[in-house]
Image (cartoon, rainbow, N blue to C red; front, top):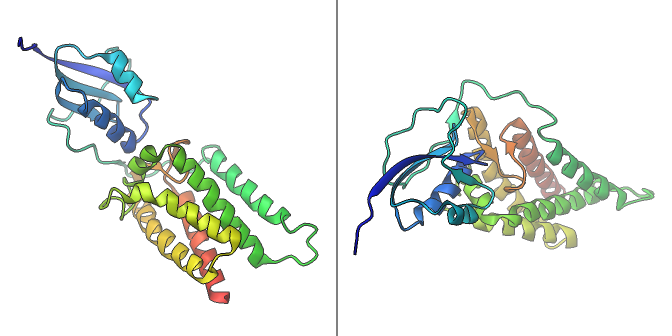
Length: 260
């Protein structure tokens, strides 16, 4: 059988926004039979690929989904590419001396979703003759977990890739990123039907408490990575907003656990 000549080219990749995207694209490219070596970089979305013969870009782009690989040159100056090698590890999330200031417009989807959940949880008790703060918190927790698990399950693999970039458990145990949305879903149902309140709140404190550790560490280390709280649907950067979100949920669960 005739051996095809090795071709080494630079490729541009559009649609990548975080290290999770880099890992997703790398996984797809690694599955191409004729690719011998590759390196994917986030800073200026591109790849250096060595392959046996030309790549079937049309087929690869179908597999990539929302990402697009092409041979078109980028208009901006490229960042230096690391030495090419076997694709076994992806780039570490980038760091900088300071994180960008929080822009409310950036977090509009998150704020709207939380606001809707809070509003619906409030209206459930209309006309508020015997309003219960505890009941409001239980309904809010139910809505929070159900809605947020929904967004994560829309693209489970995308969420898992982003989540393990900062979560201390998912970083060591990849499968946890695939399990976590179902844990949230179960907690949402448990809060909704008021199933075993003590254990439901205890599990929430443990699960979100551990998850918060990775979020806090990422912020302290000023890592520019994508927040996976709304799965792979919205491109939300990690910031103090994420810390407040997680710790607020831990606080409510701990309070309900304390007053039971």
